[in-house]
Amino acid sequence: MKPNTAFSSFALALALLLAALPAAAAYPEKPVSMIIAFTAGGSSDVQARIMQKYWDKYVKEPWVFVYKPGAGGIIGFTEIAKSAPDGYAIGGLNVPHLVLQSLAQRAAFNAESFEYIAQVVNDPQCVVVLKDSKFKSFAAILDYAKKNPNKLKVGLVGPLSGHHLMFLEFCKLFPDVKLSRVFYKGAADQNAALLGGEVDLIFGNINDVMRSIEEFNVLNVAAEKRNGFLPDVPTLKEQGINLVSDIRRIFAAPKGTSPEALAFLRETFKKICSDPNYLSDMKKAGQPAEYLDGEATAAYIRSVEAADKKLLQEAGLLK
Image 1 (cartoon, one colour):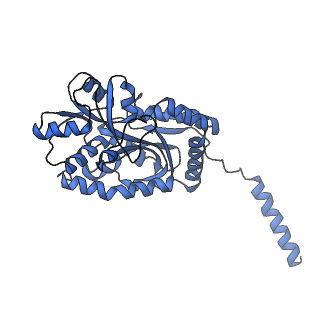
Image 2 (cartoon, helix red, strand yellow; image 1 turned 60 degrees about the horizontal axis):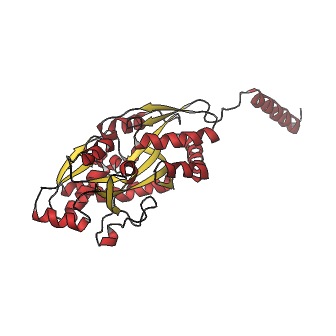
């Protein structure tokens, strides 16, 4: 047999063999577990449920919700980090909770334990009192608290949450202003405490504050610019106070997730976050949508980690 003829026969045989092999299944070929680190019905769950509607629009396999609440998100975040990196377990993360907990509570994860899919929400925090409060401005609160140390109670979700971080930043900016902090398990409890007069003010994120907006007076938003949900409320920066604080909602997969699965997830989340109907649903739910791709999300987390660590050190909260 001539060499060229032999090579052609080998190539034909190889082609026939490859054709007989089953084709590799396209990801995903089964339902994907969506791990939520907070209770059903909370802000994180509501946002993920909105996103599920549009996941179903673009992907044939559904999400299966898995709730792992507790310890301010640590239980669920750990579950995401420790899951098999096969693309069939993803979940929601909150920042700065993720960073603060990994630094101060020796959690079984850190910022490098995940492959980031996308940021979907940037939820600014704000200073809130009751509508009938005697305090009509943040300046009035500062003046009273300076003259009456620890008389005013501020409600926070935490500890080691975005709300707690805002409080630590406040204390650093105003060392002579003493507020008495009161921690609550969740935003629903925090809102109820203000409505019931247990506290005088709260530092709360917009999505949760909007649920009781008829009874609340939002004095200022801790953001770079005014927020579309509260366009008439000035930022703290407009009042000369350099305090920006927010909670970011992020989706991630375990470290080491296959590049193919991660690329699919990132592309699908980008499609969802660009869908006009999704954005409309987010607005109706009071969810401040802000999309960052996976790489930009990872870069943002790295950018805040050093500053958060320094703040925790100064507050004596690092173990």
